Length: 226
Image 1 (tube, helix red, strand yellow):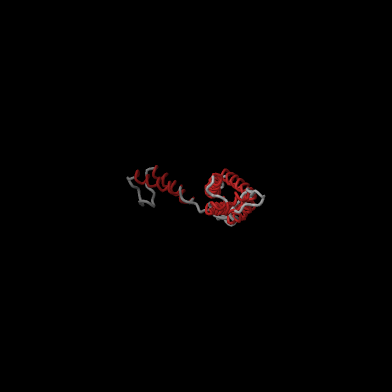
Image 2: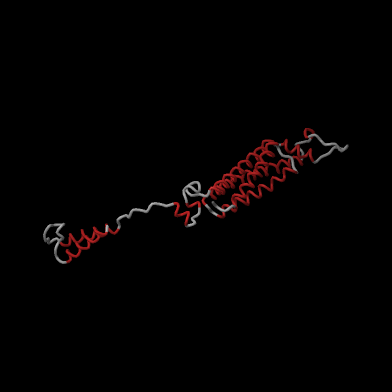
């Protein structure tokens, strides 16, 4: 490339002096402006010649203290930290389990309402009232059904929000990680209601796994990226 630049500069000097370079015409030529334009064009082309890129040395990045996510083999998804990918996976899993539990409430319908009323009602002699004896058409039952339905619907909604926000957290945004953690913490605390109110069996099982997976996701979100 240096030789080509020197040759172009010599051509320019000869053309400015009134003669065409010998390797262009072989002798003097009156079309000096044409050859001057050609020489300038070759000069510009040599300036923009692409230089061969130096090979990447991952060992040098390690010695310079580069983050593990900068290396292709240290993370997942083209340099994405593996810990962040696991945190997002755990958060999405917790959201899916939440949806399963909410669907269980909706499918149970009035039966879970009867179970709740039976848990908090006693007969005149102090004995427990069977759930089959509870009137599901009463005002109390209708109110509890509305509460259970609202709880299940809001759980599904926020679970879908968590899936979207957690997926966006893969891009490395701090705000999305914080929002995901807040939703996971609230979701985990809400599972404490299973200890005090009647819930379908499938919902209780799903909620147990939600607590375990959500806590794992929260820890992974707060761990340093590596």
